[in-house]
Image (cartoon, rainbow, N blue to C red):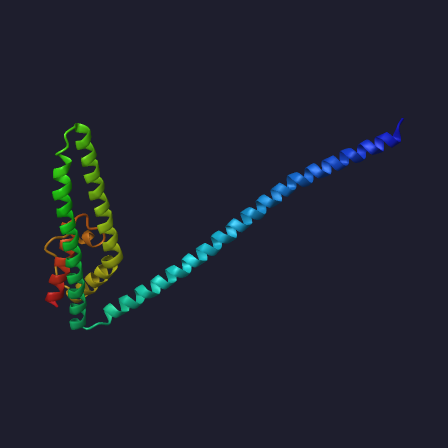
Length: 194
């Protein structure tokens, strides 16, 4: 009956539907673009990480080739130098732990109340745990790979060699100072047996 009103109402409804659809799909498109950018960044980071791993692998291969191609005297000297550095490392952490034992252990029990004793014990425990983490991280960073390469090369050159203590896992994850001492002693013994 009123075609003019119908056309105006239809145009308004169509326009409202169009703007709602644009608003809705604009948000979806923005979300897809953001996801795409995030994935591109992750892909870029992954490629950088892969390149860093390639560089580390190349350095490892160079070190391994250097160890394998070395003569007996050079291998012995390299091993004994690592043993000396390892013993210095062990001595430093042994002094640190002894100092921590002396100061923290005795002060942990001297508090006048149970709460002070508990607080002292908690502080002592935290210090010891942090010291252990620091020690293990430094071993992993400075000695682990080279110690394992030298051990394997020395064992290949000493076919009849048997370790006094069958704790080969100590090279990968020494649990305490005795494990570090085992690694140093075992490497020194093999180097001197060449």
